[in-house]
Amino acid sequence: QVHLVESGGGLVQDGASLTLSCAASGFSFSEFAMGWFRQAPGKERELIGAIKWSGDSTRYADSVKGRFTISKDNAGNTVHLQMNTLKPEDTSVYYCAKDRQRRRSYTPTNFRDFTSWGRGTHVTVSS
Image (cartoon, rainbow, N blue to C red; front, side):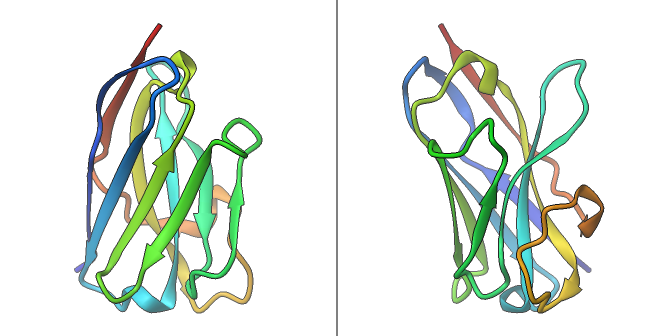
């Protein structure tokens, strides 16, 4: 059974940095791409970035490109989201999810490519 647990959220000030983690179990983590999503109050969940199953390719939404970095620790079954220069508009619940396809040849960028979201971790950026 797929189990994803996000952690690391909190309250930070405008311009601060924060690193989120997603601990995975119940599947062959090293063979699946992982995605990070966020959902702000009253808004739809959006895909903000993803990392290929091998860990050697990433893709990001324009809203976070250059500020956020995803890394994948296949030995530790964990994916991280390093967030720098945080802004109040980054305030959201952040989720991780796994790719539906094992060893996809490219980094998935479509919301529908992913399944099995965790319960999320809250990030609040104060101005």
